Length: 412
Image (tube, rainbow, N blue to C red):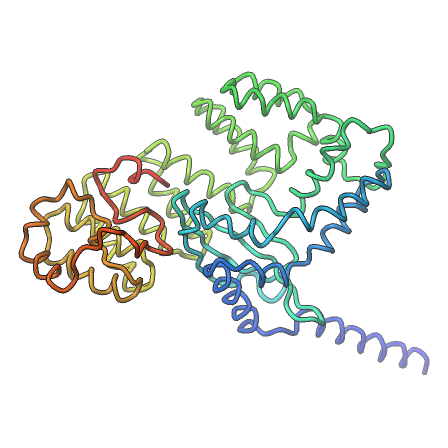
């Protein structure tokens, strides 16, 4: 009888545990992610902050190492006042705040749901995954992971907590501290020297010093990212490939590596690597139209404007509110001499995004366009606004894509 009761109770507890694990529907998570997108796009970090489990992260950090009481108390009192996490998240919209955020999709549902976001700004393209969990108080954000840098917020903040302690190791209780974090505290001076060498562009020396650190620290995620960046900056392709191979061996499924490889290929303008790198990034993400926008830039640079225009037309059909696609194709078609088609995009730009795109064309160029019948017809009802008061709100570049602008052309 007791065995039967015990079995019944065990089953009940199991069903309760399963039910509590994630009883929020996929659509509920998606609606939550869209709320994040909406608030961030408006420049409002409050929704993110209200749903971010900052206290839980702080508790985990202070529990990871025994410190003098005053350090823990100071950290707890000051960190939430000094660090606006939602604003940090929002900074991926660019320093000028004119970037855009797009919720792409929910991943890993129902076990470990994450919301994948795309950020496009004058500083380039970035992706972020917010780790979501269902609680008694609704859906919360437990942490977030940024592809550019390959690090989550919590471990990054943990290292920040450790940094002032490096000169007081004798006062610390490291019995509960992870091995890599112990090594970080003990080798902070070396890491600081590597950083100084990198700033002085002494990349080979920095890589040599890196190899002298303990293996547990060399394999640490933060330091692995540093190694890849050092190798890429050194222009030594052999060292870069070794760094990539080492990273992939330790973190085989990390999307940040795919992102870093794509950025490296674009920076090098490596024709053999760019296309497979973008394709791999697209597959890793589960698809993103913005990668086609970048690919259109590549095709234009390789003097294949028709392919670039075809891609941009596809993007506009698939994601009709992606402003940068309109800006790119308008400038591209003007450069190709297709003035009628270029002007055809002006009306939807003005309707969707609230400004006259001609305001942001270079006034000293495109003389034939300015004199064309297509533009003159547009100008009759849409004269130039010389005050430039209607600046695009979420464009990734400051104005239309200008193929003659080398800086703009390679801003990815």
